[in-house]
Length: 146
Image (cartoon, rainbow, N blue to C red; front, side, top):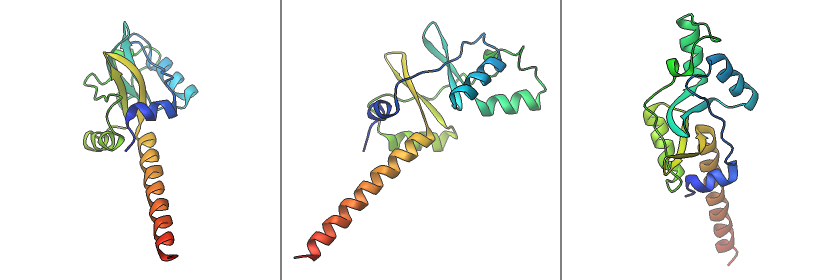
C-alpha cells in the first residue's frame, strides 16, 4: 500500500494556505482560483487550523456573516486532524471516514508538507486495486495456458 509521502510526490507539494487574519472572502477566492476545497491555516509556519469551503458556506450563509469582514480565525476548525508521510493511504481513508472530513494536512516536524483530499486517497486506492486485479487476471490466464 502506498504511503502519504509517495502520494504527495505524485500529487505535488504545492501548499496554499490562509492566515488567521485573512478575510473569509479572500480565503474563498483563493480556494476558487486553485480549485481546492480547504486551506490549512498557518501562523508563523505552524498549523493552527483548517478552513473548508463547507465551513464557509454554512457559517457565512446560515449566520448571515459578511465574508469580506469576517476573519478566517472566526470560522476555522481548530482541532485539526492530520497525517504524516509514513502513514498508508488506507489509514487516512479510515480517519477521514470516521471523522467526516475530506482533507488532511500532511505534517512532519511541525511543518506542513501538503494537504491530501479524500479524492486523492480514493483515486490511489482504486489504482492499486486495479493493479492487483490486472496482476491476478494475468496470473490466472498464465496458469490456464499450461
